[in-house]
Amino acid sequence: MFVPQNKTINDLLAQNDKVNYSLRRRIYDTERIKSELEWQKWNMLTDKDTFLKEIENLENALYRKLNPKMLVETRCEERLYRAGIELCLDKTTIGLHKEHFQLNNTTKMLNDKLNQAKAMHNVLIEQINVLDEQLKNKTHALNVDQKCLQYRVQLDNRNCS
Image (cartoon, rainbow, N blue to C red):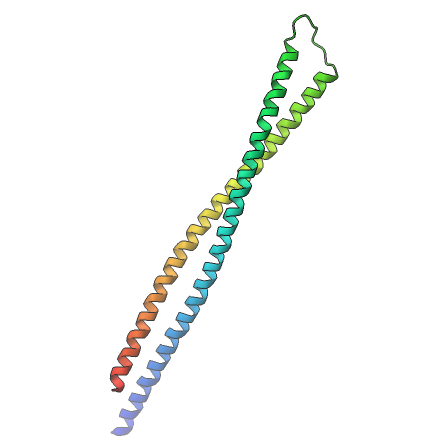
């Protein structure tokens, strides 16, 4: 009679130890994953700041190119509508057209880079939001597992008393 009862008690204690070990292991794994997510989020926030600075620099560079571009366009128009002078392509006109072409290419290139930087910034923000959601879920799971283990330890202490 005592042998089956002791065997059952030992089996229950072994199962209890396995469950407690599994919970501790799960808590450890969850904490490790949570710290990895926090590290990734920190890196992404650093990258986000870098992209914001790059976007600001590109916007400033684009703004600095607009005044020279407008000046070249104005000079080309004034040369086009000169009174009393025949339309001709002299060195000055050709130079102005080259400068206008270069400024157009530069502003187009800056706009493309700016759009790419903004797109990457938006993707990064979306990823940060996903990481925030994952961190929230991991924190919740960690709290639940820790409370569960805490309650199991309290129950185990009551049974031992």
